[in-house]
Length: 239
Image 1 (cartoon, rainbow, N blue to C red):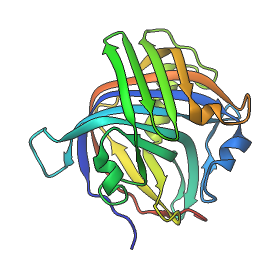
Image 2: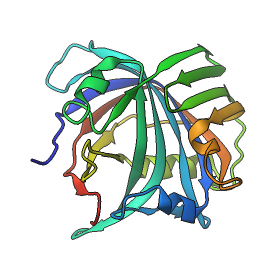
Image 3: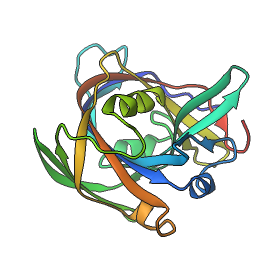
Image 4: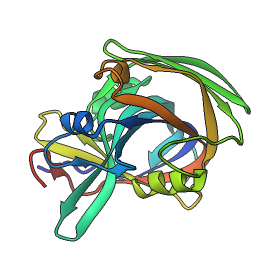
């Protein structure tokens, strides 16, 4: 049976999109055969999404209360083809959560396999610090929210914002590895601010061949209402 998650509503209380330039050959080696890297200026685009969700609930549940927790996802921007044309999104080889709920029900209520992690940090209007510790992956991020923008991938924050807004479908491997389970993020209030990386480390990217992953830019989202819906699953071996 194909995976089909329920439609969900939530609030992005805080989201850090920490983005890397990634060697396209290395990127392809991390992807299932049905996907290919989406290139910008001849580089693949990958990164870490550090996401604090609030009020996650089925869309039919009207009161703005529900589950919330810190989450992390390592992502690679991808493209794929089907009968209707070429599409853009992200492939998520690793998902982590501070909550046991997505770990237990991943593949049913939530897409893909989730691993448990511990999160700590501090946050002010001008600075966000997040540390994630898991059995297999560690992340540390210290980001300032500023008006300054620098990136070799995107000329402006507007360009970067449009790229990530367009890649709204996230694919994760199923438990058996035969399919890719997806969620599509939608919002009528998409907005991002530029951030500056004071210090960022990820054992996932640090383990790649030397020089293949280079930190490029940071985007910050706060207090954005969203809905998630599930597209049809993809076969992981072919489109």
